[in-house]
Length: 230
Image (cartoon, rainbow, N blue to C red):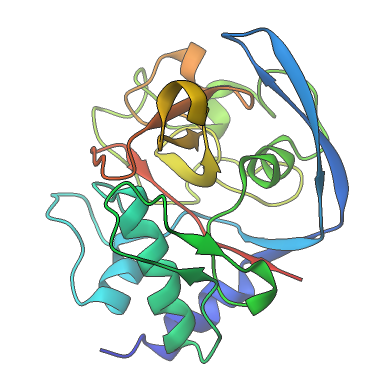
């Protein structure tokens, strides 16, 4: 299947370019901070939708949610395979080399390839914060779908207020996989996800909140958005 040109055009039109920066991350569990240099990159303004996922792969995971909601029930492995498939259909060189290890220990990324990829968690937090330093970039009900206002389901993307740089749904609606391994010495291959979902309470809906799971993990409030290097 070839992705509809209108969906690809829409995706490219909603890729927001950000300049290089130094980003400070914090892990609340260990009470540690660290700085990460981020090169210039582009990030989608919205998460990958069920509509886009189905256009690339032929179908989206079963769900009663509508086509413009974030795709969920996708593992980290599913997300990197999607990025490669999307890149090929867009005429771009894929970023990922993917082997046969279900724990993804053999997956490598070449950002310079120019295709679509997952953001690093530093890129994700940089975009989410949009220059702010508080727990989140706006008033919770205004910017996010969460446990107290979602009605127990995901919602269409871009139906809450964006941050100052034009990114929607980085807080709430669906958690988002990032490239990074969380802590290989303690959790092995577990990968990071960020942002909070439609069933989370405020503590999970913070720009700094970090969670993790196995790269095969799938759940109904975890999706992803795509990035490209500049």
